[in-house]
Length: 209
Length: 206
Image 1: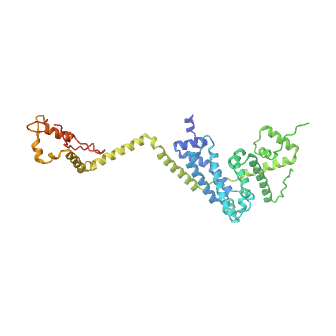
Image 2: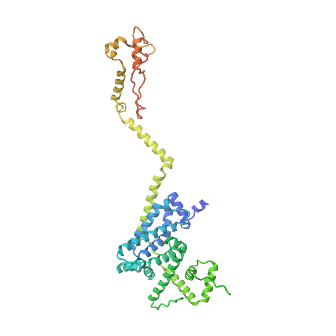
Image 3: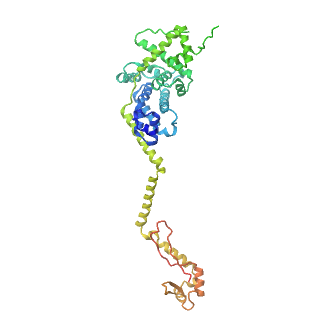
């Protein structure tokens, strides 16, 4: 069975097997395959959360530094490798946002209403948006996403890029499943409003209660 | 009376419905509720279409130099781990290390002069120790020559003794008992010494 697996082209080998090859045989091509396979999603998630290419590069590299050096100590081969990497990326991103929040929002009175993107200077946002518009983004989706509150944004991104279940998102972000579901609901409602505004439509959101 | 389905957590159920995370019984429940509440139907459809738009979210790739830097780091780390982590489990590497160490010791032994290995001072100290055990009355050269004569026997053995009383004579015995140092070869007490052996006459039972 092993010999059959080993004859597969690398792009057909699953993550688990690639991780085994890298860890046990020092197979660099296996690691490259893992990186190639997941780097876009990880990078996009980080980028969407921080809204800045340079910072996203730093966090992305920091994430993989931890992946490389901590794999033997903290990665359990029974679990999904990408979920483990995603947790590292998420924690690194949240750490950055917290530090940034402390730095930018020294005089904040009430943290509960705080939103990171509301406190960023217009220049920072403009830069992030400029990169997106000039780069690979073909529409204004990322711009809208960047305007969502951090908690809503992370639920949307974790679901979109990693197809995480709400249970997994709840575990990763240390909230209840209902909170994660509620955040997704409000994120979609807010985005809907932004799309409507962008297209000059009047938002007629139905109030059920 | 018809039993009303439990829709107290309708918001969460709607989101789960949109993301296809409901079990079949819950799906039936939500669909039934949408039939009965048009506003709920509109909300669910709105959520679905918004999520559909997000499928077009771009996937950004990190700059190639960042990816390459990560690959370099992975390569370097693996090399370090392999060398330091597995060297004790690698018999070939251990054998090589042992051979190198042994060769180093041997070459050092040949390169060093013999008097460094067994120093003269060390030999002097041995002799001094032997002399110290000889009674003071025998320290003069005349006394030695009076009591002892050294001759070569028929069997090519060296004898020390008194011409008149022979090797087992009382003066010689008393002297040698006190000296208590048999004739033997002295092997210098160093691990580098096996190739060099100095012969010291330090005493005799005869």
